[in-house]
Image (tube, rainbow, N blue to C red; front, top):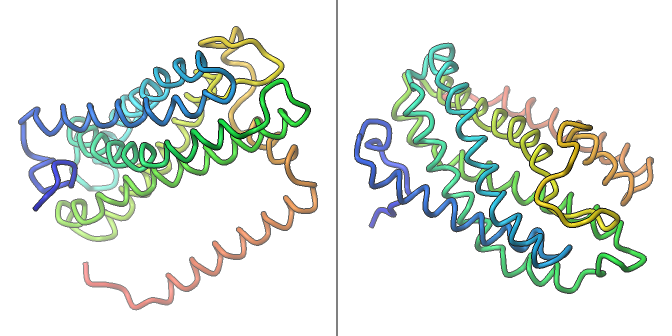
Length: 250
């Protein structure tokens, strides 16, 4: 039996709002549950704040990417307009929200057993939360978008166009979502700063600087360099092996 959240060809053509409302409800509920565990380490109030802000973050990302991907639909040749792109991406976000909600019990107990914000190791715990939750959200987002693979292959003229469209969606979600997350911070709550819904200086700094500082907090410079080389070599080998595969018929 087909799940309500499993994408079908009718998703891109139907005007029925039922699947759209279900996807929106699952996205908001799943992200709110997971978001509470993200902020709970700093305080229960921060958990409530993040339960509100994480769905808001995804909806802002969806709104911006729906417009951007509507333009990319013409450039890449997928034929997807603003509404179709937004509907497909909302379906992907619903899947990502289910993945994150399933991890909420684990992340809640991790926060419950981590050093408290006033402990000597609080800065290290904060950096660990930033990196681990960033990784979990990124993986869930990729899983959600890749779930649209068969749908895009059936809709687009060639597999190349479908693949380029999915990669553009992943890149857009990652870039825009990262910057919106910085503007809407805090999500984890720095131990040395007061609990607040938003920071007084939302445009100061950027997400990537915070991610780099968290890496430096946890790993020495040599380990970061080795990890970067390993990732680069792995990505290079993957691209080489992919280019040597026999191309599939379009």
